[in-house]
Image (cartoon, rainbow, N blue to C red; front, side, top):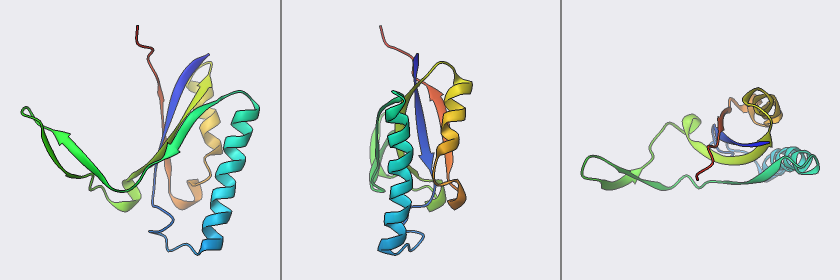
Length: 114
């Protein structure tokens, strides 16, 4: 099996003004999905990301505040999963709990380093 990274983009529950109860219900969907992947031996790791960050870029690299994508465009976290193919990993991403909140999943194969 190969490793794949699922990169999640979408609004945060804070941006959506979720109540604590709504946040807890949404997080339970995440825990159920990750639990299913774990039970299948497909979950490798992952974590949510904070909204705060820095950008490092340029020919003479400069550190600036950022990222400043629109709230619905921001990267909120990632998972690393095991799958036999990009197609299979993409099908596994269909379990992403935040599609109904206009979230998206980018699926990328991780290339092993020698």
